[in-house]
Amino acid sequence: MAAILDRLIEQLKQQGRENAEKLARQILEKRGHLVKGTTFATPEGAKRGLMTPKERAIDRATKKSGRPPIDYIYDPKTNRTKLAPWAERKR
Image (cartoon, rainbow, N blue to C red; front, side):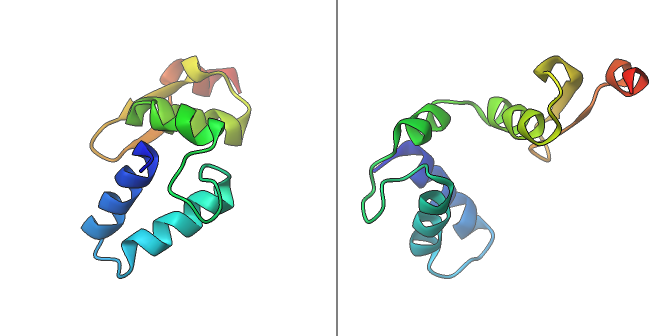
């Protein structure tokens, strides 16, 4: 089973979601991180599976905003990023 799938299943179970495995597969297949109908990661899914939570959070933020990774600060308590003070002034 792909590392990214294992991690998402655990997160969904912690949230109290029913059918966590089925839901995780659907989410990852839709994102293109899992080969449809299997538990095998696509090349993109394998790459994300090797990333740390910090790397994934920063990657999500940069894809959404188009800003460089250096503009973000990671908060491990919330698994979210926010703009760094120096990046807010650049706007």
